[in-house]
Length: 330
Ligand SMILES: NC(=O)c1ccc[n+]([C@@H]2O[C@H](COP(=O)([O-])OP(=O)(O)OC[C@H]3O[C@@H](n4cnc5c(N)ncnc54)[C@H](OP(=O)(O)O)[C@@H]3O)[C@@H](O)[C@H]2O)c1
Image 1 (tube, rainbow, N blue to C red):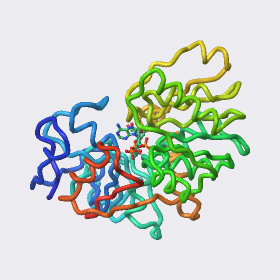
Image 2 (image 1 turned 120 degrees about the vertical axis):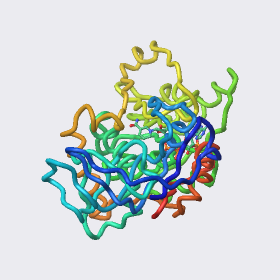
Image 3 (image 1 turned 45 degrees about the horizontal axis):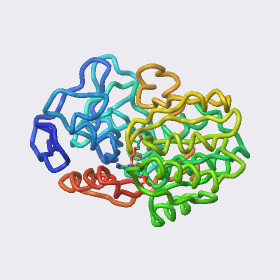
Image 4 (image 1 turned 180 degrees about the horizontal axis):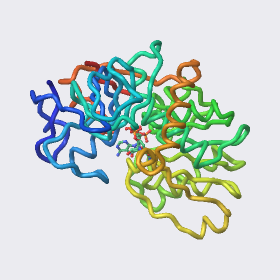
């Protein structure tokens, strides 16, 4: 089968197309004939050994897939050959076949196209788990989404609207802000790109405060860096800062602000929920699939690529150039 391998740490250009034997499912596992694999920022990190997980090489990146079960291992009863599923293996998705634990697969309806299905779990899974279950976002609250034109960011904009919030989308260019607006944001905010000095950090805080003079109930932050503290400063009493990712670096927050605002800084580790709370993962993932089937959410796919085009798309994620989702189709 064809795959795209990382054989040594490095940027996307180091990935190599390869032909390898098909994997076989072990007990409790299924094999998925991958129809689509969505790309995510962690794909850019994992191949450079900059992600929390450092798999042994060679490995294929690709954190989330959609496809059809084409073999089942011993003891698997809940899935059969021919079932349409999505899964979030974390890696290995940029391959024609992939083996995954059966209980990590989520069924999808016949009517759900594979390209959109592949882009549901990481982005909308994170957005809904973060906003609803970790952040307790409720109708009428005011939500700020940072990095709002990225994969997770756009999903958080849509999820915020589904949950009835007022959504302010923040991004680093007018084009990105426009994409977030199209996804349903009520208002947008264009922030500058770092690095920031002391004055720059102050200006960033003032920019967010001016855009949200009455304060924020929830901040969804997949960006981190200096943006996190600037956003924290605009939280209302009792607000919640959702820590989702660190594309701009890992921030250090002054805890006096947390006390003064009686606010919460809440970690959102959706990627680990499948392992730590499998029941919750299955329930939350099924909710996302259902919302998509109802037409209430839709991944913004901007590129459908072949396997050999994936390295260039991963490089665009790393370079802060991507808007929406890129999906590799097989
Ligand atoms: N916690 C979880 O369970 C979970 C799940 C999925 C993803 N994540 C994390 O969420 C983050 C976003 O993932 P994604 O797939 O949505 O990424 P993405 O599509 O690349 O979006 C990330 C956004 O970050 C902003 N950014 C700021 N500095 C950047 C830089 N130096 N390089 C690239 N982007 C930069 C960009 O927006 P602007 O240019 O507008 O600032 C970009 O649109 C990643 O850190 C990822 O690891 C976490």
